[in-house]
Image (cartoon, rainbow, N blue to C red; front, side, top):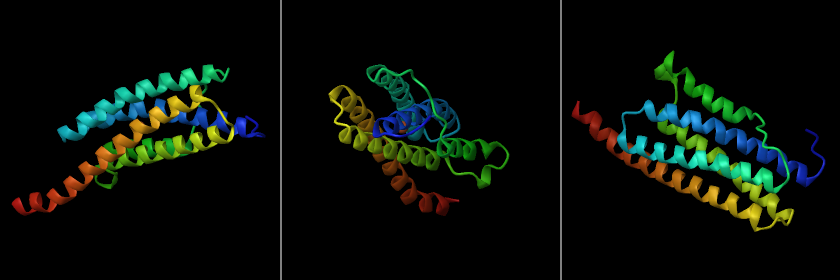
Length: 164
Ligand SMILES: [Fe+2]
């Protein structure tokens, strides 16, 4: 797609966000079934449901803008998914479920922040801004919860190692 205007750029970023969300629905399912950490699994399963809803919300946004929903591949999202999928061959050199989930959330948050900045410049109305803000809020709440788990786990890890 040719990007000549801010509107084009917004459309393109929306297509990328749509791709990331759809990728995340699959990836989150894999992460949930590959962790023995119940708190983490619950968190990720809840976020997977939210992510399915994000896909629907983004489809609504395409409609609001009079566009066809279309997913533009993003290398970063593919890279995160690929780095996870190598875990079957070399589990020791692959990031953990929690690390993959954290990277994914940060990626999504950046994408929605930039969409909201563009929406502001384009003076888009609440019908565009509100769904993006609602999604961003859920991504941020998920990141906060994952970071809290990360802190908790890093505090507990040395204790667990001492037990052995
Ligand atoms: Fe997310």
